Length: 241
Image (cartoon, rainbow, N blue to C red; front, side, top):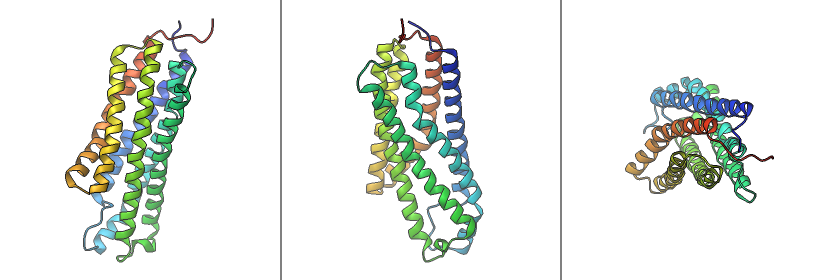
């Protein structure tokens, strides 16, 4: 039995801090941008709204650049888990890595769409013409919403697979139980978001928004902080003699 190496732990801690800092800061900036100029356009489209949208490009660009960093860190999260938990031979370790890469990639695609949109806000694209902007923004929102919702599902599955690996490695039962809850929550959040986008029910949309914007970051803070404590204190299986 051995503890996680000091250098590996420092790298995992840097990874977690970068993920959380970029995610939380990006959330604040995007909420500020949406408060100033929401991407859900009013009816009718006004010149004032279009001016606000153009003026908000910097907030959107900064917020989604930070989300890009966070989603890139999510894509690599499976590597940190596998290095720490050292899953038994089989499908579990590769599946955890691949599923987190998929989750992060879907998030990155949504971030790139919004970063591109922010640049179009800045240059005053023809897509911002009053007769075109509503349809364009609707398509943009739908694309990003579906990509974000889809990213919850592979992350949830990967988190669930990590439960068995953690149990085999001797991690505390408390973190494993919370891990299982976090996995189910992510899967449920993805399904709820999909249902909200399909039905366009206001209540479901509000619940999905709260779940993704408020609850998910809080769970991530607890999950990653607890994980770092377990990495530092739990004796885990050694791969060598």
